[in-house]
Amino acid sequence: MLQSVNVGHKSLADYATIATRGLMDEILRLAEPLAGKRVVHLSATAFGGGVAEINYTLIPLMQSAGLDTEWRIIHGQDEFFNVTKTIHNALQGNPQGLTPEQIEIFERYQALNAKEIDPNEYDYMIVHDPQPVGMIDHFAGSTAKWIWRGHIDFSTPNWDVFNVLLPSIKRYDAVIFHMHEYVPKTDGLPECYIWPPAIDPLAPKNMALSAEDAAYIVDQFGIDVERPMLTQVSRFDPWKDPLGVIDAYRIVKESYPDVQLALVGSMAHDDPEGWDFYNQTVDYAAGDPDIYILSNLNNVGSVEVNAFQVHSAAVLQKSIREGFGLTVSEALWKSRPTVAGNVGGIVTQIQDGQTGWLVDSSAECAEACLEILADPGMARDRARAGKEYVRRHFLTPRLLRDWLVLFNRLIGNETDAEIDTVAAAR
Ligand code: UDP
Picture 1 (cartoon, protein in one colour):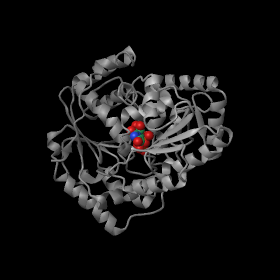
Picture 2 (cartoon, rainbow, N blue to C red):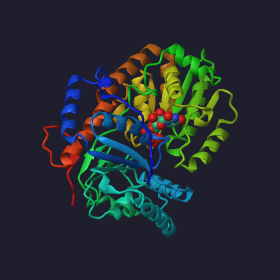
Picture 3 (tube, rainbow, N blue to C red):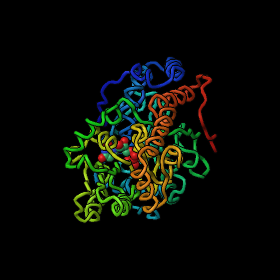
Picture 4 (cartoon, rainbow, N blue to C red):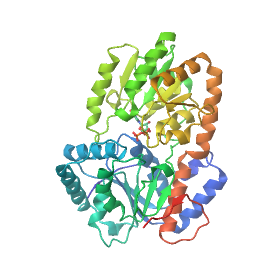
């Protein structure tokens, strides 16, 4: 059997004070006909990155809504994760393709993992991202509804690589993308659903933390809490552009010599490139004592990430590509001035000039930080507007609602709930 993840317990009722009454009522209505349905989520890792972050909340809330939901992790060795990393990069547009050996490795692990699960035990099989996408090939005739959830930007994929996955994707009953722009422009996709992910306002990562508590935690990492700090929280990945963040910080430092930079990044086990890039980032920082490069290896967990975000003068997410960028909603939810790359899903979260800053270069990123440091009142107003936007669009109850709408539709239950779709192009 594939390893099951213990997600703990959450109660939908606890979210009633944060979500609107209308939304909570709709969730209960949608969940009623789904009581007892068996759902499994399949993904590559239970640790690090957006999928894990979402599942730790979504799954207990599906359980609380009455669905019998579990989360299982596929098996993989480095040889597999090296291939899936190449696939991930290629799907976001990297020209490097797959060798026949790599395709063989990918397919071998799909078969291996397929042996470890029986879809007849479930009503819904939810497959996250490309790593397990091909398991479905081994279950012709399965009665479960299969849903593939793509979490990255597929708008300009390397088609050679996408076409390796396409025959598997075509077998699904539905696929989900964050944005319309991400639906790959190709024939034969199943019905596509469009909805963004969400953050959990009650999780340790996002729960209310006082400025004093945040400073107390950040102080333990050696940060001088009396001096301004910029923070980026993200995996060590070229698409997140930590080197560009360091460039921006260096420009800011010319005007604010006091400024400090925290780069907080977890190391996911399905990301073998992470270590190389971590080392590159450390080299690029060139021993600057005001740059703090921290990770889960320094015991930076959810509460610490929360504290770093809360304590920051500005939170950065200077991505060059970004599927969604949960860290942006996380920062806005904490009313922090947020400066982020003008790309991908970030654009749905920030209205430039109103709820945050969208930037196209390190120079623009630095300029935004300088504005924030020069006029904290203006920056706070923008950040507060950002928090309200997140409240309406990017909190978990809305995400749960979208899933429940889809589950109902796939088994033919009529509901009057609206959902954004792109019709199947068979
Ligand atoms: N994250 C974390 N610790 C880290 C780095 C990232 O907890 O050191 C979390 C971050 O707070 C966010 C998620 O991992 O919740 C990253 O999701 P995002 O959508 O921003 O990026 P992805 O990693 O999925 O590309």
